[in-house]
Amino acid sequence: MRWSVGLFWLSFGAVALPARAQAPVAPSTASTSAFPADAPATEPPVGEPLPAPPSPSPTPTPTPTPPDAAPPVAPPAALNASSSGPPSTALSTPTPPPELDTRSNRERRPFFIGGELGWNGLSGLGVNFSYHPHPHVALDTGAGLSLTGWRASFRVRANFLTGEWTPFLGAGLSYATGLGDQDVELEAKGEKAKLRVLPSPFMQIAGGVNYTGREGFVFTATTGYSILLRDHNTTFSSGSMDTYNDAKAIYDGGLILSVAFGYAF
Image (tube, rainbow, N blue to C red; front, side, top):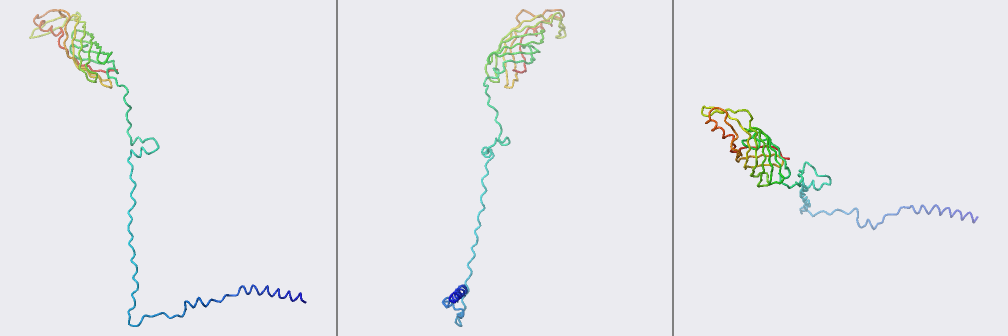
């Protein structure tokens, strides 16, 4: 019997304790007394104007911010220099390689070949050859056809300067074969004469100017005097002796006038 009563009270306590824990808590009267819900709103006394509502605070005008300045654009040279790759050929001009050979043109190009046209020159109408053992010294030769026959000449020339243009003086020898058995007919003052041109040795004293360009072009202008080294180089064949005496002087040498063009290498 005692065991049954103890079991009853134990079962009753197990049911009553959860129900008590879940019971709602009554609101506190102290919290509502501070803010009474039924308190009447206060009204202004009669005859007094209503207070003006507070004016809204002015909205601040936003200050425009200046746009960010664009970054400076580097010049093409700076861009090209800052790039890690090879320089652009569109922005940079290649510089020519420095000239390492500082010798004069006649020392760099000592040989010359060209054509001559002139009177009493090295070849008359023919070909000239030159060699410069030194920029101030040249050995000139020529071969061609002249008024006194086939001509061959040799001359030593002294150049005053080493630049492209230089004046010069020279001296040499020239030999013409003559015209053989062929007579030359001349006419002067209405009278005719025939003469024969003999082999003719000459000594030449000449001066002039020479141009030798860096690319090899050569120009030479020569003047001077050609001296016959024998008593005479013509013989009278027939006709007027006066005409012969007047005409034979053109075969005796005299003034030198010639120009030559060519290439030096």
